Image (cartoon, rainbow, N blue to C red; front, side):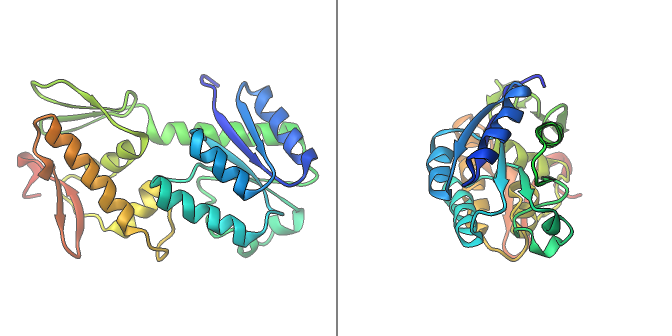
Length: 241
């Protein structure tokens, strides 16, 4: 890997924590070991975590509370997971946590094989990087560099974006002039399943982006809203698409 990722290993089993931390270290990553969701919340409050290795024996109600806190208090997407499960659970998708996303997350079975876990960690992290980095979007006079997280306008200085702002603008700029509902943005940007709420997260980030645009002398209504339709990235060149 070309970067050092920050991993959170959540398991009440010290052997699982040690094995997962060893797998992370073998790839050159840092691992933060915690034994409970409360400890996980404290770590997530102070460290930008790139991936969570999660033992399925953690009580589901405590996990759901942790995920709800993360998406509401932190207001950005939960990191991808590598879920560690017994063989019986891997064959029962309905038994997996509701926030587990097969296209985004990884799955390994017990007894834990450190080499298998290391491969899955590497695969999931690489998938995350390729989904957010590597190219430039251009809409009219606006340029979004997804490698450097810089937003630039013709004749002006570029300014930086947070990772969540990057994902939000990418989703909107990939379909300029097309309105996306808050629910679809929650799914695409924050990985929050449909029907689980959280539209205030979208409103807060759109508002923050508008303030950032205004502070750099740009039109905040590039991020346009129509009630009951959603949000769109609209510039003069695509306003009537």
